[in-house]
Image (cartoon, rainbow over all chains, first blue to last red; front, side, top):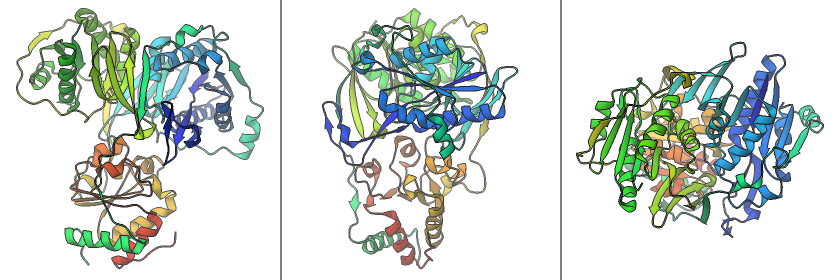
Length: 264
Length: 323
């Protein structure tokens, strides 16, 4: 059995930042493994540990810098990795959900996995749509926002909980091959061990161009164009209690007593 | 061709609020395109849902009677067929957990550009949408160069439509291929039960990522004890297993409406805000002056929680633990 996990390197923004040229200036960005993908990797690795002959392959769309993130997924137990990137992808003006799903679909075609796990969303763009778009593209069944997964390898049925709003979960049975988008909290992602980090260095990490996966640059053309990025105007008019911590605490305490929520 | 088709949402015999927000968003967009607003109601007691969704501004409501609860394979087929029949310009779906379970598939099936989690829609020569990125730190505007598009709209961003409507209600006879239904909903489960109901509390002290480590929770517990408050949290604390699910405030947790809500080390992501914006008075303790929580806060302290909280515990005669 083979599980493909999509892994994205996301940009995280520092508290103070500037926008230039339609995006956040590079010096205010830090890169990391997308939080939701961390849970997806863990879920796949746990399945591979519970069953014999399960291979976990990660698929990433990203520049060379992203290899650090991919190595982290390998250190946590994925067996090998595929990274799709070339000059055309690099120069795409807007890599939309459709284009990402198209690239990942090409990897799925090559790898022929039984199960695809993605994060529910990426923390930077928050589209929350790539997994389900991918499923429809490759003709897999799917379930979005999965926070519990029991896979019956024999029958190929995944029994999942989908986390709905308001503390309600939907129980659903999904026939594989399937794409499941994994919600945070489904498991406890492990930290990479030193041994894992060492082993990751020698695990295969293949770079594929569009041509390698049988696509041409047309797939990158998007009907969407990002025309502006700005900081939302602060709607806040909070009264700020200032001073040293004791003075601040004093003002908050006085407020709580005035409100009558705390006695004493 | 200038019409808007919006998909309503229901769950366990209730039309969800977002359906009436879609009426507002959809009417506004249809006014700009110069078209009609169509709603679709799929599965369950469709006539009852159609009645409830029949608010001012809706032109036609299409009902699809098939099954009881949401199933994405049914929704996908029904919407694609309805779209082919009506040929609307824009398709609107809620950016809910279920909306995100079918809208991307429908967009893919119909070859429509898709934009999700949209907070504003403008139509002039074409469609321009506004959405957030980087956890709400920035907003972006996106132009859609094609004449048609699918858009999911963020819940609670538009007001619920009011006023009785006089829409035509039409049954749509969708041809659902059962062979394509490959997922089955077998039931529901309520989580977040247990010993405490944070939605009943008058005074909540809530913690988020800023607490850094599980061990530091004892500090907040001391404050909770000294002030006789109730402890709650944002999602990451529950995801980490540091507090049980019944303490979680937000979209997937509980909606709370206390007199006072103190958010400590909580940035105020939209999913959290959905659960606590109804609090009477919101106080934040946060080192980041740009955190979205400041947009909601009535009072705030821009300082390190590990300095302020011990001082506050002492104010109320509590004992400050070593953390």
